[in-house]
Length: 103
Image 1 (spheres, helix red, strand yellow):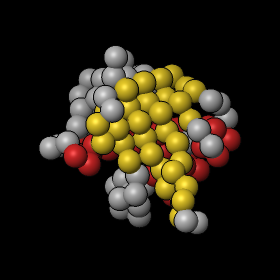
Image 2 (cartoon, helix red, strand yellow):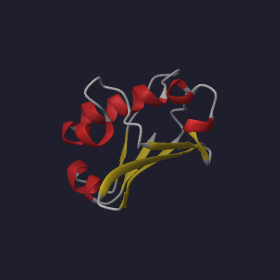
Image 3 (cartoon, helix red, strand yellow):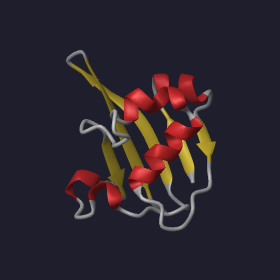
Image 4 (tube, one colour):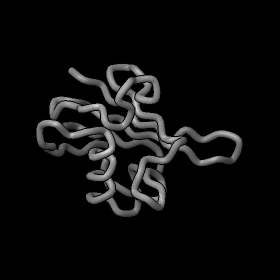
């Protein structure tokens, strides 16, 4: 899986893009947790105090916002996925969007 970082997340990751392997059956929640394991300084940006993806984090799978998928963050993604992680900043609030493009 290729994960591309944007904005200040690039500084935290130290790269524009990284490649990681995930096990079959990995969910979006598990991927977010894996990103935080690799880059602990992203924790406050991606996960709440309970380790769940923040409500203002948007995750897109094949162009569809996970919030509108039936399984939400338990949606299973592929190791062949390309993930784009970027900030949506507006009105002084700090937000993260994760875009997952399968293919």
